Image 1: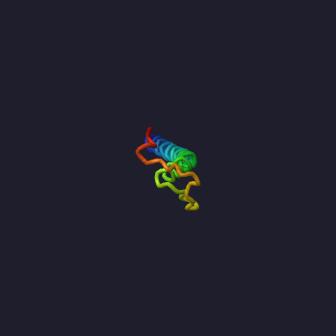
Image 2 (image 1 turned 120 degrees about the horizontal axis):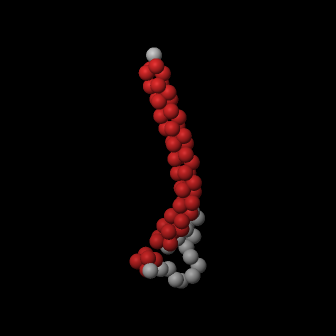
Image 3 (image 1 turned 60 degrees about the vertical axis):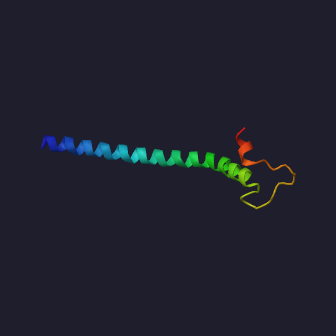
Length: 71
């Protein structure tokens, strides 16, 4: 009976650790996604030469080639 009690406690602790880690990971992933999304949207808009949200082209005549963006 004593061994069964320790196995139950160990499995319970593993389950709690999994639940805590999963919640922390999901929260961290959402935070990282919210910080990366605007940067990725801006990068893609600069590469294509127009705004991905509204489709508007830049008002200036200077449109940089995608190979120059890495400089």
